[in-house]
Image (cartoon, rainbow, N blue to C red; front, top):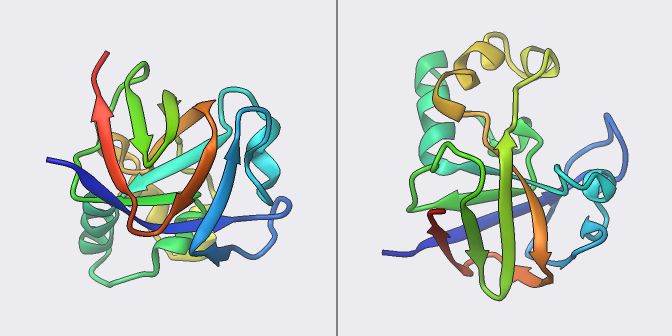
Length: 147
């Protein structure tokens, strides 16, 4: 059963505020247009899964906006596959999972204890490389293909 892309965010530079979008262009050489990390070949796009985010918030005992994670895409209705090599399809866009997004110390500046809450079971999300670009929209069908 497919999931859905429920939110999109970009950051123009490190430590810049997160800007949320309804629609974003995704390219093979630049990741999400407007996001500073897109040129990094193994970390062009970051994804976090709603269930993982909600589990981290439950551990903290408080609801928090997903944008505190500073990831690019929030996916609902799918389990985090927790492995590199799988493929994520969002509409026509294809992403190859390259690894885990390790939560950094900045997470505790966002909310005390957030880093530790994101560390188990890849809750911090995934990094991915764009293998086919296109446009993503909030609400797009999202699937995962195992390798």
